[in-house]
Amino acid sequence: MEVGGISSRDFYVKLLHPYRHILGLWQPDIGPYGGLLNVVVDGVFIIGWMYLPPHDPRVEDPMRRRPLFRIHMLESDKATVECMYGHKGPHKGDIQTVKKDEFSTKCNETEYHRMPGGRQEEFRTWLEEEWGRTLEEIFHEHMQELILMKFIYTSQYDNCLTYRRIYLPPTMPSDLLQPGLFKGTYGSHGLEIVMLSFHGTSARATKLTGDPNVPAGQLTLDVDLNRPVVLPDLEHQRKIEELSRLVMGVHEEMQREAEQQPLTSTPVKGSADGACVDACEAEGTEADHGASSDNQPGPSTDSAEAQPFVLPLGVMARNEVYPRTCRKCFYGTGLIAGHGFTSPERTPGLFVLFDEDRFGFIWLELKSFSLYSRLTDHLAHAHAPNMERFEAMLQNMQSWTS
Image (cartoon, rainbow, N blue to C red):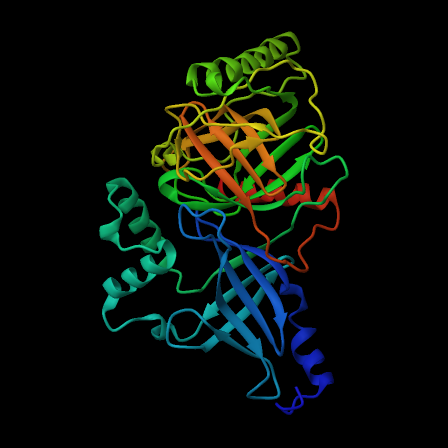
């Protein structure tokens, strides 16, 4: 600040204080796609970083970051907002607080976003950054259509976006593992970001990024921690029929209990939660996973010993490199839907806890496997003040894209 001739008082009064309300985590309103924005103080700047998953299917690689805007006082005695979108450097932008926990950005010089080669060059550059591949290297025709659709939809905004505040989930001593953000494989849709949180005897994964089938904000996984599933030996784990028998056994038992207690039951199907129908279009690998439901509480995560794990044959996995041991398994449901979030349905599956930073889910109906890996980035100003505020945020997120 001294080099730039800025007094510490001016820095606080004209920059930090007026923009303090936009620090933290935000979800952009980009239709079904969503996203994750982290606004931080970085030296003499306030910067809005968009967090992007690694290239599919490298789910354990670190997140990628892209600056969308910055605010500073380097060129005048008042705060200057600059748009950082595009490849021609910073240019004039604006930020407006819409209401509490919501703000919008605007680019005032969108010509900075254009490229000499027109939309074709912009698409090629976006594709390389977003997917790390050219369109010719993506052989799946349906995947090409999804990618082109995302480019057309997201590029129309030109960094003129509305953001809504989101929080990291609170942590409780009884949690199965540390809640937080995870990258997960979603078939032809690539990698998406989910938020894992715990609610009594259930674990839930909510989408922060989404797709045309199941949009951002929806509940992709709902896991019943009262329904542990015990894996059989490796030979039986390789049989998809064994996995189906075990998971559906728990599912049918829950349905019988629901019929006996109709006033207190919770339906297993037909809710809004997130997985994509296209998860089943993942590249196939040999998979095995079996389980057996005793309906007896399993050992805590801390005391559970690692046991061999393999995906059943016929279960497709986007990432062939997955852990070969796990600590616990539970019955759960995943949300699948048609294009445009039509006919959403919760379908049975198996939640697999590998370790503190990785878990998986076998979509039984789709015969596909999603692997999730923790985001390790430090995210400041992001934790929910209390569980009530966090629960309200989750409900709002679902309503944004329902």
